[in-house]
Image (spheres, rainbow, N blue to C red):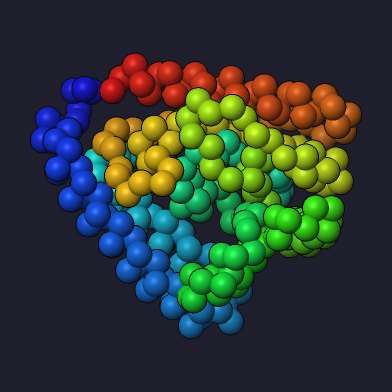
Length: 254
């Protein structure tokens, strides 16, 4: 057990109670912020995005208070300072869907269209210019990402995509979808990869949240113009190598 985590946080019953309390708070304030974003949906995007950042900051603070789960950022020097770019993240937890609003400039992220059907939360996601796709639509979904991605980037909004499409448990075999390669090729922009170990502390398919420190690491940007095969090989190798290292380091400190 890391020395900065009090022993009482390791008690299973305490972890469950605090995790359930946090989940209830997350649900309630998501509805509140969703309502606020819908109410003020007429505001310019940068100001509207401020509400999303406030939602994310609030929930990350509550996560630390209730569950003892914090985070640190490394490799910030790899984030381009000017212009909108494409960023591709390893996806192991729900946690990064909040953190993305804090660590990057305003951005549009690619999500499954079913999320838009959720009252308030889905409507707010639409107002925040998320790119909603039908995962079963094949090439039509890829073309939609390309068209809307160009539109968002032209407006100075970053585009975020999870290349595996959905969350993968730490250590699970990677399952990269081909669409992200088409996005890289068509948009002709640097790609900023990001690896993290959030799945260790906020696992899939459970309400339990574990205390600790999530490590978020920005990796070296990949320049535009590489052949598709080379880009795919480089991106997947960098994300997998970094993610495996962060997971191993996280397990070693638990």
